[in-house]
Image 1 (cartoon, rainbow over the protein chains, first blue to last red):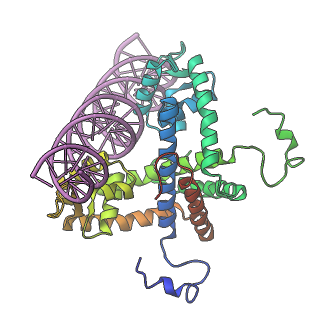
Image 2: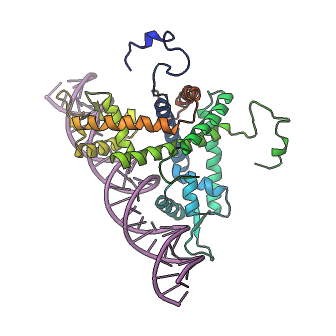
Image 3: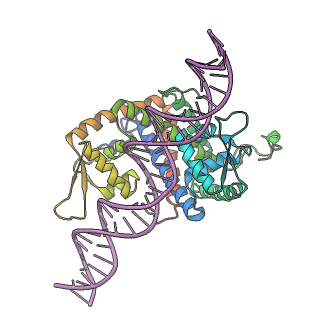
Length: 171
Length: 171
DNA sequence: GAACGATATTTGAAATGTCAAAGGTTCCAG
DNA sequence: CTGGAACCTTTGACATTTCAAATATCGTTC
């Protein structure tokens, strides 16, 4: 933070460990968060401008797209990391737009299964292709080897975080 | 997509590049997003349980904490990556809680400057310390060298994304 | 077969999020 | 000194978000 430190790089504190600041984890987190926000906002903007869709809707449809038989709302909630109550409203709006269908199976009337309509599949298919292209574009300046490495190492972070949650977890 | 490919791993397509799937950027993005969501939710839960605060409030206060003179709302909006209209409400609620003060400087009456109250500084200070500890805990299983590497490489991603935005950018 | 615990979804209150439009202010050209 | 462009914040309409409480259904136990 103070600018007196930048002059003494490489002298006392060299490679590993303290680097020039402690709080490495904090700094990583802040950078992850801002980067994710940046990408999210860009995707949101493009989904809106080019398809009139929202990011949560896209996420939800992505889950349904790979499960043609549909998914129960609770399962959708887990996969999208969105709370139950939220899924209800999301699916409601998508149903109103004719992209998703809600069915209650005969066996268990507590359950609601959501599945894509034909219109939903067509619609999502187009968005998914564009979406993938946007990401490739946005990350175009990053060496593919680095992308791979990041994928692996962020996996390690996710794993560590999963093992240190406070609530009732286990997943 | 087709399952006929999984048998020929390591034969034609070996190390770099195609790996076993294309869409490396997409997969990195999905992993970044889910990891960020996971950490956010954990932090949100702890902020709520231990301090009765929300994550956006914490973020906003963090910006004000390092600028004791306060920040204009527009500047706050940029730094927190939150829209103008949103900042208005956020600051309103924080002011109602006595954590933030709103002042209109004499020079320019278009401007509103927000700054932490003494209570706000005390409150944030405690949260920040805890927050840093939570992150260290959550990432405890990750080698510090990897954390450093991630910090650097995600910086590269952020930089690439910044250079490929569609809207009016330049930051 | 009525009650109870477990499961699944919805609802309601409050906060956060976006965007676009509207309100004030300031500044500058004419 | 007046009109309009530029700047800053607020407002309003909606969508998303979380949490907790309420509903509804199922399955089992006595």
